[in-house]
Every structure is written in structure tokens, then in C-alpha cells.
Length: 188
Ligand SMILES: [Mg+2]
Ligand SMILES: [Zn+2]
Image 1 (cartoon, rainbow, N blue to C red):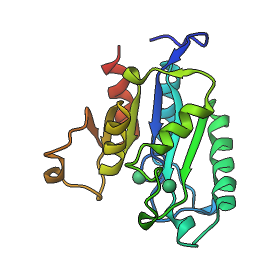
Image 2 (cartoon, rainbow, N blue to C red):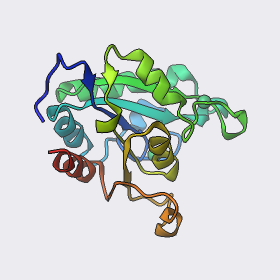
Image 3 (spheres, rainbow, N blue to C red):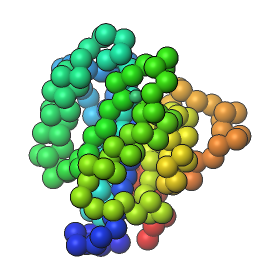
Image 4 (cartoon, rainbow, N blue to C red):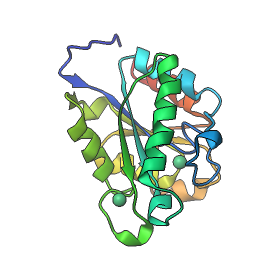
């Protein structure tokens, strides 16, 4: 589908961060530890070219755990966005849950709060029916289901096929690039 910047309703790609965009080394917060996964930049570019707006929804419980601060995350995300901008990619919104599992907040995925934050921060209406969540955990899949978008689940050590009996992803694949290729084919 061609990109139409004047379209009032735009499809959104909600991206998980760690293990989806960058290598999940566990609580990544330093610029020197940031490493894009193979093909993730290409994937984001492909999605953008097909008219999708990109956003990131990320759980960062390391903040609640006192391992790093929201300033550290902001610096890291500046670095990420700088690298992406060089490739012509814009991430329209980044929403972060700084809480831990015990905080019972409304924004730690799979709770839908981060999607609400993203919805409020963009100046257009998100076309939910044409939007997708892409992530590597079951909580990402559940987040996508909770906000009513389609879902792409990336292979990871965080889930097994047995766990998928109750919840099904529209697309299952090995990498963000494979997901992007499947999504643009799916929606053509
Ligand atoms: Mg992840
Ligand atoms: Zn939260």
C-alpha cells in the first residue's frame, strides 16, 4: 500500500524493543551495549516504505529495580533514533514502562497502557485494524491481542510451542525482517 501522509487513519507497527529491534543481552541500557539485530533496520525501512508508522513499546523494569535510570534509557533511545535516522527511519513514538512486575501498573506489557500512551502522543488516528504488534515474548502477543491489533511473534527462548495453544499469533517467524516481509505480503 502506498504511503499517504494525508491519510487521517494510519496503520501502526507497535514494536517490542529488546530481542525484536536489538540484541537482548538482558537489561540493555548503555549505548556501548546497543546492537541492532541482523536485518532489523532493513525491516523497519520496509515497513515504513509500505506506509506503516513505527513505534516502540518497551518494558524496562530495570528502572524499578534500580539498575539504571530513565535518563539512561533516554540517552540510549537518542542513540537508537540517531542510527535509525541515518537509514531514513523515523520512530514516531517510544513508550516505556519503568515499573516492575510487583507494581501492578497499567503499562507493563501485556497491560495495554503503553499503546494508550502512543495513541495520545501521535497527531493522527491509528487504524487499529491494519496495525500490528511485533515482539518476541508471549506478553507482546497478549499486548497485541489486548489492543486489538494483529500480532507477529518472533522465535525466542522466552516461549515454546506448547504455550501457544491458547493464544495464537497471526504470524510466527524467526526475525523482524521475516515478520516485516510477511506483514507487507499479508496486507498487499
Ligand atoms: Mg523482547
Ligand atoms: Zn508500568
